[in-house]
Image 1 (cartoon, rainbow, N blue to C red):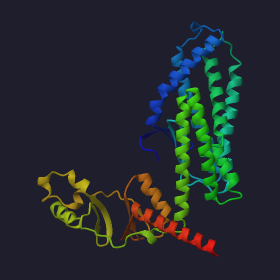
Image 2: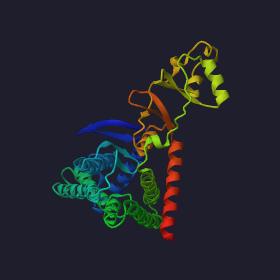
Image 3: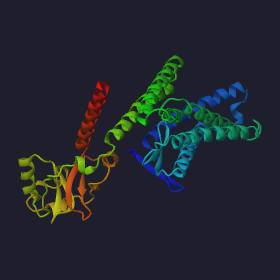
Image 4: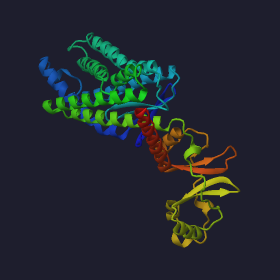
Length: 378
């Protein structure tokens, strides 16, 4: 889930969103494409007067169509993922292209390779068809359409080729990881792919510096950071595997009644140094109240308003038997600090925080390190 994204439509039940960064980069791409169209016209000795539209307006059309192509590229990934049993949350178009958000990426090497390969293959085939289609028109008949099809075909071919580079986490990098994972563990394969991705990012960055291409430099930086982030996520998932919410949750949770006045709650917060409390009625979780909720109420109303009047009833909950990694994903996606842990009857039995999970991961890492050292001694 990307913050700052808005839904613009839906295809085959998959929400299509655009990120605010897409709106920032669109004018820049329109300018770049418009400038290239002017240079192309000069090279082909075609006058600008033969065009119906201004080259920069054509550049804007082309920029929009490029992002449409990226969306189709991501749809190809998504349809393949669905066919392999994976759920797609949405597709988001953003600064450097698009991202298909999935609940879980399969660790089956064949599934990952197929899902990664289908995107570049689509872009290459789509680009080739557009390139051939542009040959139907001449510069005397519909030159605007010819130019748009010609450039869009080239860009899709470049997109397909670039995504096949083993610069993890690009599609080529994921194919590489799938191949390595046939001989190594998934974590080891991810680490090796990350290292190769970093080298590729460095080479792309050097190429950007020597050619003065700031887009290549930005792409190199993005690949370098994304590769590290993906490895950390894989490491975290492996480190937390097998753990349940009940293993890391805090059972002794301080709660309050919804009948408490805000003035009483404030005194309690100051005494116990807590910034928020679950609101419970006869053991059942009813809501959550925080210092931020109190700040929204005028000071002279604190002695009259009760907690139940200002508490939030939209609470994110988990069960004790839920996987801890799934709980962490919920915390990250919702950008919250804690989750309430309830049983089947909605009774509050604990609370799990981001800090609890990170501490649990660190303990697991320590155990694994000790285990590895013991094996080396043997």
